[in-house]
Image (cartoon, rainbow, N blue to C red; front, side):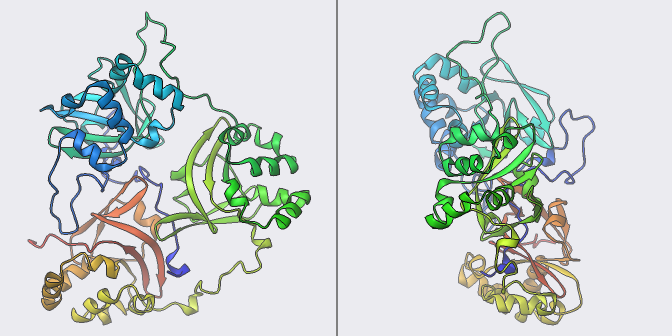
Length: 489
């Protein structure tokens, strides 16, 4: 895939759709449409068929990202409880959420059945509460007996201090909402906090956080050599894109040593990894470029579904520090003045752009879409002035449809036209425009729903895997599943 398909990043913008839906002034925490469903759990398949539901525990097991939670449930003897009739609402911490707890503390908790049971039951609320029900409350009474607070922070929903990152994962005996941290019941006012209950880790400044991580020793050495320690331990706030030791190891040793020995050059490179202000993933990934402390801009893009800053992949985000935040990257990035070819030859100029149809033909991964457009007689329409926004399914997306069904659709010109026009939105909507809405009116007459889950953007049930592919008469966003309108209308 060429750079024409590497563009504005959707990942990590979850919960940024403040424009979606009507705000509810009576709701203490804001707009319930800010919530989203995790498409990997309990969603429709490409053919629109609902999967068979399982109970809460089996749903967690099947998801594959809750192995620590399942182990904890087993250790606490709560398996039969969470497989029973219920219904229950479970706020389920991912494996990454449990990984925030130091291993020795986590092992101690799991070994203490009474404490473990108390913590787990604090994640369970009796009854089936969907996202809209949760957001309509300021607190929920848990099965552990104490309340957990519901709030919105910068547009993101939280239960206690855990962000709710996916919602409405349905089970036969209730519903799961996914959270990014383990939540702890509050100690009773008359009781001191028990020493064995783990507290949230104490944050350090950016430099000490990098030192403590253990995987940024070259970066720390470089910061020391450049005399930037006091700067990055200062008040800030800063957003640092931190290359790992493996990222620095990609640079030949003699070149790296020469860079570290040249204080002025080293300082310029390091400051190119720093952005003034505290920008969490949602802030970073909603932009196409960032102004760095070095003075030049760095580009944010999406490549085959992965987020990048310049040519470095962002491999982890939102590592919090007292004076800002760290995002981890897999390569060292260089200011434009140090790149011999800052403009890549395969990035098209305006004069090189083609119309939407010819752009799809040239890409080579939309042959079925092009065939369908030809069969529907829509070639001249999509080569017309427009502008249009096209959500273009790849050949792999069409391959999800059984061959006999696909052939039947292509043979039915009226049906085919209706389906194809459901992929077209009048006007030119870039990624940021799409993300600012939750409904998009299509040329077919029905609407598409825009949502985000776990940092990935979807139209209906189709994932947007690349964006802002420019054409002379509009823009293409690439999707992984064919969209189907309500064929009853």
